[in-house]
Image (tube, rainbow, N blue to C red; front, side, top):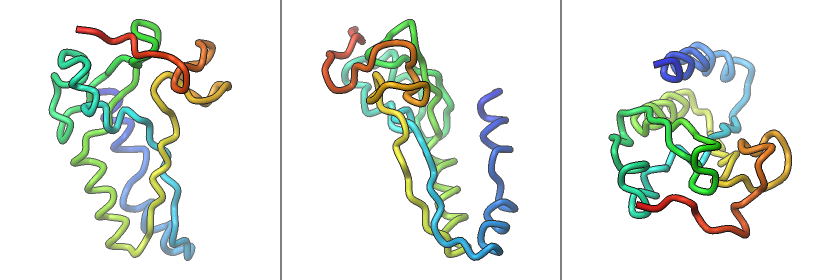
Length: 128
């Protein structure tokens, strides 16, 4: 509920109106891989397939750092409505997948720091 409350107040249609009134036509929207975490359901139905990706906010484990790092999903219905609201205002969005499972580079922005980067050279640690 905390994550849903934050998400619903983080950006609003009033913000989109302000963006448009400033003449901006393109906005970068950083999201994480967890927006599509249900795509990993084949490797762990319990971890990634036990929620409705269209409606639910769920905390899912990072598949490379199970028990050490977790992410919050983005309900697709919320994301789709955000896209529609931007389109209504003629604002284009650049969806930037800002963090990859296991982290893709060194640094605090990877989402797994201080754990080692694993996306490029490791095997998932999620098993049924």
